[in-house]
Image (cartoon, rainbow, N blue to C red):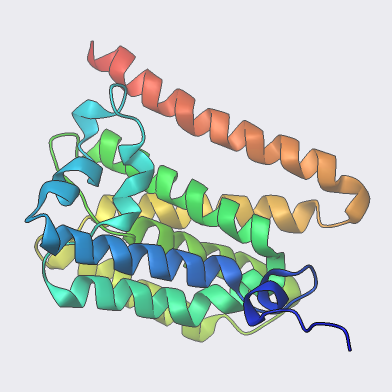
Length: 221
């Protein structure tokens, strides 16, 4: 009798519907949250995003999505949104495209903070989460789905970012726009023969984000 593959191998195999990337991000973020408490803020200070350090420690522009404020509601909201929306979007676009969406949305959110709130210190996955919202909105519109409910949720959460203290609305807006642009690239290059063009456009968008970071410091200097 042939040996059965482990549940983990079945989950990650090609063609599996298990949202591996979503669950990996969830697990990694929750693990880092525990480390934040265990190290009494050392991990938070090391991975949070401080705009003045963008060129010296550029990884912070991405690791910001792994750390959260000490209040439990911050990480609960972000991880709940990821748990609900992540599997849907990962199923629609595939694993590597979902990962690219999350990463570029995080980067776009950080760059928005760099330009609009350069003296702040930011933590949280909100930029990436709003990027997923933006991507899902674009794809739903392309598929002819009803986006009215999603627009209401987006509107409420964007408004809260402007009126509640200690919330980076800049990261929300930047992530939302970044995710929408990534999804637009996906829907405009969705045919298999367009994959090289899709990768080139994603690379160009990533390069544009990096250029935006460098330009901000060039203008400030």
